[in-house]
Image 1 (cartoon, rainbow, N blue to C red):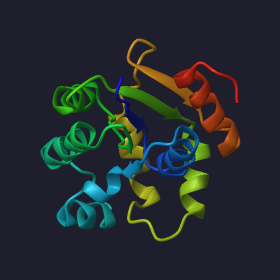
Image 2 (image 1 turned 120 degrees about the vertical axis):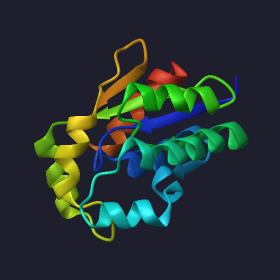
Image 3 (image 1 turned 90 degrees about the horizontal axis):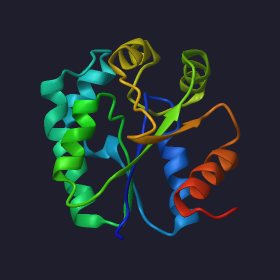
Image 4 (image 1 turned 90 degrees about the vertical axis):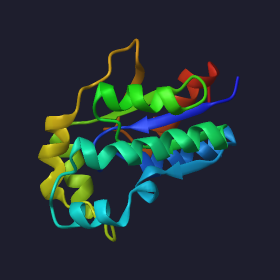
Length: 165
């Protein structure tokens, strides 16, 4: 089966870091969903303005297009609401496996405060948590991010591959 994996969660949860590690582990490419935003959306977030659903629909369609055209692939995409995940699934060209990188606001805020060069300000974290509709076990694998990166990657790989590290 062709793999289409979405690493989802609020800003700062580690989608990019986990995505790169998981891509190396599974031997498939990683695409950062941040790169699929329009310049207008990036500027809006940089200014501390949360995106609306209308801002997100074209972005979600581009994420789904990457899944359809480039599978096997891992994509980092917040996919905060169920309707967003449904839209991605509808355009992905095949089954999509969601992996929710879950963590407390405190853990994620601390990580965001340490990162440099990213347009997403910590001030938008509350809006991210407000929009988040956590997926249930029937919809996604959920992994606690309050552990070392290698442990997160190992846990996801074991769940996806069914083999020990």
